[in-house]
Length: 343
Image (cartoon, rainbow, N blue to C red; front, side):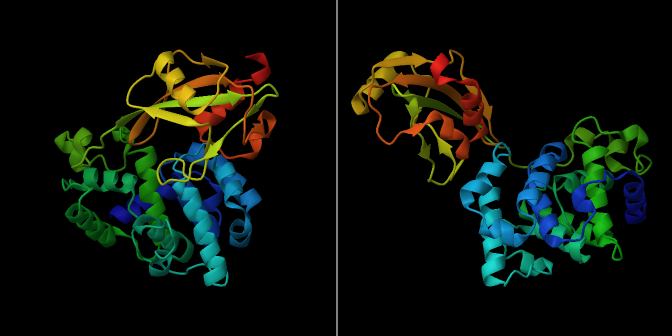
């Protein structure tokens, strides 16, 4: 049977990871949120860092949001960090520090959807509820030949019904982790290990040579191009200016240098004209001739940094204090390379 075969594979092959060595729902929740849209090798250091700084939900709830965002820096999808912090405060303040104990209650946490709630409930409490992520969609669609689009309501119902039928009622924790692990390491999106796959004698996609077309997704994500111009203001004392992004969207709550966004690459003439309307500038120099392309899931940012020398700068901060603020990795990388006294 499918569940027996895949659990046996998992028990022989699973990667030993810290969140698999515990039944603490708080730590399992941390791992699941960190690993959303993130590879394990990238997420593991962040998990260890968060557990070290916030060993309990109380510690996380008590922390300032800026500190949480600072530790999250470089991981992307910063709404996850804000939701994590908000949910921790909700658990402490509204639930008296008692972590939700089942799938339905877990769904009440901000940022926790169907998959995350199912993963925590099955792993921490052994609740019989299937956790379905991208790896699971891929394994089930290929092995069982499901051609329904997994990004539609009707398609999700088909997958959920099959997953509920397949789940091991006695070991829902091992079963859910087994299918996810199998999808990540064997039934991979590209170059799956079909020759050594435990299902190669019964896999629909392998027999029909349709591995590349499964799972099927109806919608395709459109990538938006954005052109960012960051102004690195510097006065004679080496002070600069930063601003916090408060609007909803990318990097909410993080800091950045003053931004001028355009619909295409800007010339020095356009930049100077814009600056002269709002600031008294002494000198403007383009730091990078080629744009730094920063790729996000739905948008690509073409970024230029402009060094702007000014005599006087209001609302300024010392350059060496920038390490105290959370920045997007795009900005942080620039800060690491740029040295005001040498440019």
